[in-house]
Image 1 (cartoon, rainbow, N blue to C red):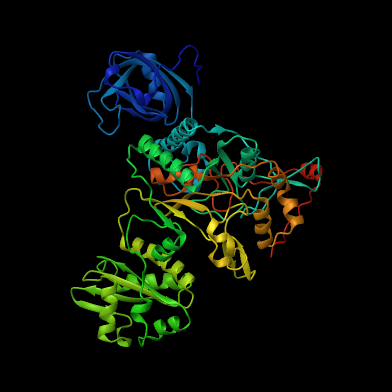
Image 2: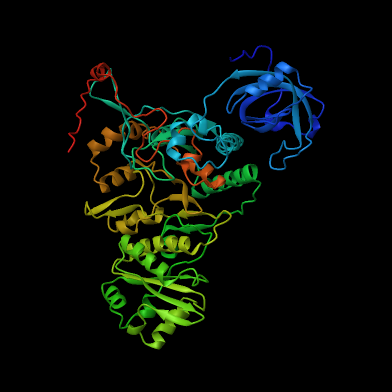
Length: 595
């Protein structure tokens, strides 16, 4: 039978006890990791969120206490009082492995059924099972450490921004639905039937209003929501470190964030981050890495072979060049042994799945040079490629051609990643970079026109203003992303505060004056009353924690995550609601017929 805690209050956490505590009388509380009955001896490993300590019972223990310890099973909740002493058999694998508590008083505060999986670090239990019993999964020391790490990072964040003059201000969760790049989660209104709030995809418009209000440095650890397909680094509800600043330019914002990143790496990992963080233009990262979020921890940079192979007889190269396209290649330097013909065939299949027409290759080993297209080339032409790629024995050169250079670079970027993964490239350390000068517009094939690459309040570069209406493809934005090890951590921009420029941008995006006012009128009205120049960004807190810990998924750093289909297994949501609630909201649910 469970006992009351009574006057037995915890004096110490299990994992905080050290050899300095020997001789001290302590009371610890927690869950039973395991009980070992050795006849005249009983040992119980007691666990709380700080770690494990061993409880000891022997022939000198009070009989009633000993008999109670005999009944203890896995995950029982205990309160134990006793004296800290040196362990006779030490355990070097845990921080408390040199001491134990000789128990004089034991209370069983709660019993427990056998859990559906063993609560241990690096559990091999099925993830769906663990997510169904997430409250048990969170007891696992490795997962608990992740959540505590996240808490400490949030504190470092608040301290840093506070020291730099920022004011934390909460913005609404139920907001007006405005276009922000993904589907909104909608909240029906009972009072205003047929009308809806939206859950915020970001606090974007509110933080700009706060700039108008005179709070020149705002920050918030904000909850955000997007109804989009999930993946390892995406959840439908997420947290971002959101901030906005007035009277600044791009350099001010990037410098502030670099200081924040330096603080985070120092405080959380004891790691010295090299500053300044290197900056690349969008065009540069696409040409060199085929991605606007490249992983710089390994090479394999994309090389332009168009001029090198121009005029060759290989029809794949010749046709692409004749149609205004190009030829690009990467050198998997030193990986010929790992990138066998079979592996190269798999990379080729992957490239085709990404839209490529094929993948040409040169493999250089001690046995000689082999290639998929050598019969179409002269010896001089092959040597020219090898020289241009700085290729030597042990290297593999992968080459692609396409009439669309933009598509070619993107596909080559994916092949770069796949090749690195198949070659087993070592990816250690942290390599952040800034990506700046993003295109202002991007061409939408389905619409047959240019659309905004960012939200419509992003400012274009000053030098691009003269050709906003005449050369959309070359208009660049005062927008910037922070990328770490192939993951986009944050994005931001300088905002438009000139009403005439804003009106022009709306017009170029096909947004009429009437539509613009309906969607954003509250902001454009505010901008009639002296908006300061401002800009900001948002760093993904979940992604940052994930990267710092080297976790494979956001689910490892979020307490109660959703799975691939945006459901939560533990509470079985989303779920049906009573008809009466729907009637109050004026909503009728139409269920799809099963096929």
